[in-house]
Image: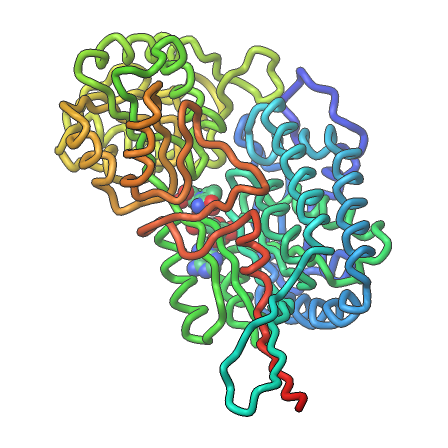
Amino acid sequence: MTVAHDIVDLHPEVSSFLARKEYSSFVNGEYLAAQTNELISVHDPYSEEPIATIAEAGEPVVDIAAQAAVRAIKEWKKVLPNQKEKALFDYATLIEAHAEELAQLLVLEHGKLFSDAKKEVSAAVNCFRYYAGWSTKIEGSTLDVSLSGGDHFAYTKREPVGVVAAIAPWNVPIMMYAWKIAPALACGCAVIFKPSEFTPLTALRLAELSTSISHFPKGLINVVTGSGIKTGQAMIHHPSVAKVTFTGSSDTGRIIGQNAAKRLKSFTLELGGKNPVLVLDDADYTKVPGGICKGIFYNQGQVCVSGSRLFLPKAKFDNTLADMAGIASSMKLGSGFGPDTKLGPVVSEDHFKKVMQYIEEGKNDNIELVTGGHKGEGKGYFVEPTIFANTENKKVSVETEEIFGPVITAMPYDDFDDLLRKANDTIYGLSASIWTSNLHKAHRLIDQIKAGIIYVNSPVRSDPNLPLGGFKQSGIGKELGRSAIDAYTEAKSVCLHYS
Ligand code: NDP
């Protein structure tokens, strides 16, 4: 194991966890012996060195996990709602107690800033606490019916959907674990969770921790390691899996939706975005440049809701971009543990190449490069924070495709209608942020922007009580909030004829 971040003393739990070096799936409360020779390397994106290998789970391990999950659901059903609530709450508290360790592990597998990693652990803790509360609040309704003969009592009850296959991306690995597992457990489901092959370590450690929670039956949380193409597909195809929840790119989402639909399984797809930032002329321009930079450069731009298409009034265009360029060019690139680091590396060599290719395409398409546009110096998958300008109506890849890196394109607009037309001119509809001091205009935009989540005068953020999900090609269904309870339960209608 190589840990190049010599500025940090690793937590003893991190050192002992990483000393294992080879990881298999964590199923039914324990690590299974690998059933294959297929190993995948996990790299630290700062040092580019391997820090672990994971075994491809494939069909045999997914089958063991599915059987364990089926058994666990039966046991979990016997646990009273208030006991479920306590168990989820205890899990949140345990994760919180291990926050430092989990955040370090997250920096090593992902590259993000340690301060952001700690915030991510905290968000996961809040998510488990939030859904702990939902365990005691699952409800149906009583319904009037018009059936002949009268004297009918009709109601609905919500039942767990069953075994959930959860397939996650690499950008916020701990948050994804919480977003998918917390509501599923609150609803009475058991989960087979596949983290991204690039960031599997935190999920494995979280699953290890879950075994000390009393009332969690074995097999309630199973983490299977491996690739999407083998292990992910095996999860979708397994007959015991009732529901698929996927977060990732729109291209993969299309494949997953098709495969789930073929087997008539329900599915939720949280997909990509190319999210507009709409700045009006009455916005507070002392806050706009900093807010927009935060909205695109946070987590190296690897956030589905990051604001990557900026629309500015013509009169404010040059000054705002100059302010943003000043912020971007002063951001220090480095280890996530560095006290002054403002931007870490992107997650992997493949992703680094993809982001750099988009930047080269932008240059070749003769788009004005305001700042950035190069790889960072030395080792590590570093990409400079990059601003392109005046891409208007050129339909070039930097304007139309999700780059998922620290890259923003800026365009001027003429008037309100021009702004609205340009902002909605995308196949995606995940998020938008609007910057204005005029409530009337804000509401007109909120009504007409096609996006699943909209923030005003702030970059887009997440909260466990705020449903998140995309319009258009950004997804099907919602996560978080009450929406997740609906997603992990099915309504059963009951009617009693009592005369
Ligand atoms: P991918 O779509 O490449 O992968 C996501 C997950 O799906 C990974 O676990 C991957 O496995 C798996 N997978 C890949 N191919 C298949 C397949 N054929 N069958 C089953 N599973 C498969 O996305 P990234 O990991 O690159 O994540 C970035 C994307 O996620 C961006 O588009 C981003 O917008 C989106 N995202 C959306 C969010 C939302 O809430 N809408 C939130 C966060 C991210 P493997 O381990 O092999 O990669």
